[in-house]
Amino acid sequence: MTVSTATLERQSTFTLKGVEGDVLTFSQDKHSDLKVRLLPQKQADGKLMLFEPWQKDPTGKLSRLHTERGYEWVFEPPLLMQYHLSEDGYPTDANELIRRFFEIMHDSEFKNYPREIFR
Figure 1: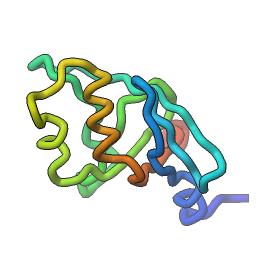
Figure 2 (figure 1 turned 30 degrees about the vertical axis):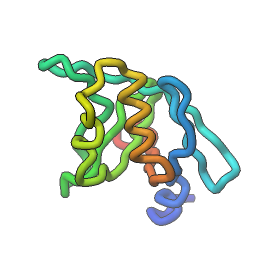
Figure 3 (figure 1 turned 90 degrees about the horizontal axis):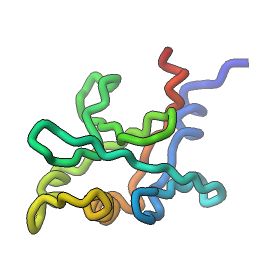
Figure 4 (figure 1 turned 60 degrees about the vertical axis):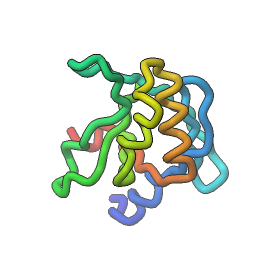
């Protein structure tokens, strides 16, 4: 039995609901919560980065979170995301950056794709 694309999309949609330190909580259908630890990456200029453009998106609109698990957490960042993350100076503390990210993206939709489906 094959799963339709529409079913896969529906099954992979989560909403960002909580944050505790470097752990985000995603909820699906208000029934199941999934906690995911972020792994901020340091750029050449020393700034921390929580996400990057998602290579599998031909339009270039989607971004992928840096996480510890074997999943692609994909979302569409708001137009002014970088501006809001760097308000009052770009944070050097990872938890502060994650807190700002959560404030911007709370209740937003994320897609969760197991990496195995792309191999």
